Amino acid sequence: MKPASTIKNNSSTVAKCSELAFFLLSIALLIFLIWRCQFGFAQKDECFYLTIPYCICQGDKLMIHEWHETQLSGLLLVPFMKALLFVLDGTEGIILAFRILYTVIWWLASVFLFCHLKHLSIWGALLASICFLLFAPLGIIALSFYSMGLLLFLLTCILITFSHGRVRLFLAGFLLAGAVLCNPYLVFLWLAFSLVAFIREFCSRFY
Image 1 (cartoon, rainbow, N blue to C red):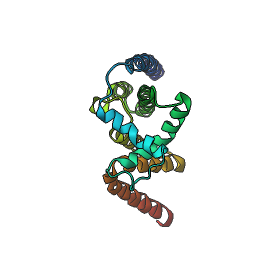
Image 2: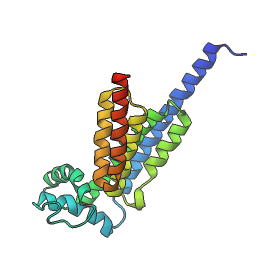
Image 3: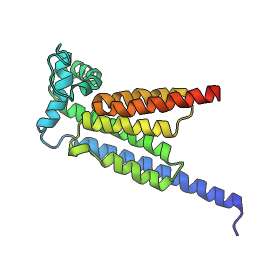
């Protein structure tokens, strides 16, 4: 039988190799996906997603000039739209820029996912993170109420599950609020989370 120290060293070596494999593979995929952004015609949905923050930047008011249920998600894109309009000095290349932005954000989220799941299963974390990185909601490379809602809700669940401290829980609540903007029906889940958090805090203080 092998000594416990030897087994521990072997496990540590496997974990380090798995982490290195993930980061090398994810960076290679990031480079490929950014290169891939230049291909494909922007269909009406991809263009529509960008019209919401663009109209807000032009002075439109939500609920007054916009009459659709997906308009609230545009608030999350306004800072990116303003920054890219300033950098590009117009809208030329704006769709490509948002595709690259989506790819980078999606890659950062996959790294975040891997770093939290690796403590449960190193190979499971690697597989889940790579699958997430390669997945695009509805096959559209764009920040939309679909993709942002999924992303923010996933990050919320990870932070709540692996939370250690009030700051991370506060961030989880902030991200869940963003998910509600993308999908207003999630407000019921937000209320349920808030109720559970209140009961937990109340019990920890008085019982």
